[in-house]
Length: 105
Image (cartoon, rainbow, N blue to C red):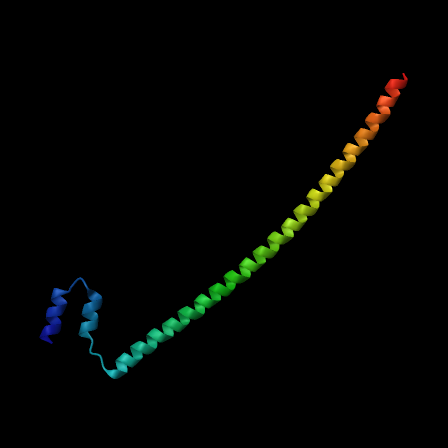
């Protein structure tokens, strides 16, 4: 007991050490602490798996949405290119007609 008190005084900044040294460890308390640690670990692992699954779902949804947006933008870009080509062709045709009219006059 005197040794424990001396260790508490010497190691007053290490409260964890002093708490561990002051408690008496027997098979039941060791088993209980080990069981508590295992339970906390299992809960932490389960929570981590939930987070990994959630992140995986979010990444899959994001990838799908990005692919959908890419398809939409690509289709709109294709439409604008076709509109541009048609407008250019119409202008070239109109220019050719105007040039013929100017040459006839």
